[in-house]
Image 1 (cartoon, rainbow, N blue to C red):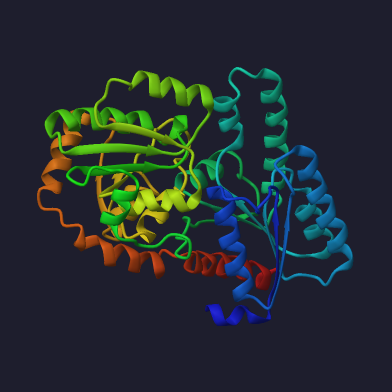
Image 2: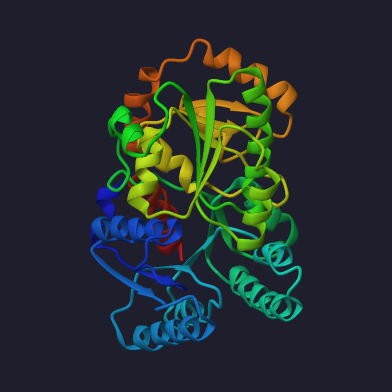
Length: 377
């Protein structure tokens, strides 16, 4: 079914968090909602007013009650923690429910709440409820094939739910190419150096520590390079990382910035870095990859990693190295960089972001999957 066939369809989108802010998750959800609204005949978005438990529950209840009296949708898409609003309405009105799955919540709880036992127990309960509704959904859209396979092997045996994997997409409206030389001057970046950038959450699983170790080895081999880390993170971990790396020359931590400033740093960079740590079932689908290429920037991604190196290599967006092995990665990187030309990627990466890797293309795949379920139900 092509995109034009969706104009008669009615779709509800239920989100268990606020979408009014400027975080990557919120901006991505805004993009998804906008694309859904542009492609279907009738669209409704329901979202929580905040990230608190009470707000999430109110959002679910509000959707259920309003959905019982509103015109029946053809499809419900949900990304929520509790799941009962979309789940019950789907059962009562015979509407297929497709849920987004971005991570294995029970696993994240173990990492994030290791020293907070009460919160850990409560979130484990939420994860169990979420999984119960996953099994009773009509479809699950995963953001990484490793996560999809993990759920199929561990949790979905005997369930009738259909699954697919769709990576994230590029926000080509808020992220776009700008003149690097002008931004380097504005951001006080040395114009004679080669600037590497990581932009995103400095969390344990994003592999920033691996990137820093790689950069430390790289800077000893070639002192032209500089690394800038843009983004905040969990306070204690962020400070520990800064303290451990305080003696590395050419390394800068900028901290959390507004989205427009993040875009400026991306456009000023010569290369954008995409590491990840192998400490979760799934590495996810990094929004920063798509922000990078929307700015026309070449990407250096973690090798042998679905959602990272496979996307970069398939679409010719840059190159891949194993950040966890600097001794081998640095020579591979320098050999590639010796024949590197910024102009080879600027127009190419932007064009890929606008077409094959856009949010529009992502939502077309969502709708093809969901409407197919609806028409077969």
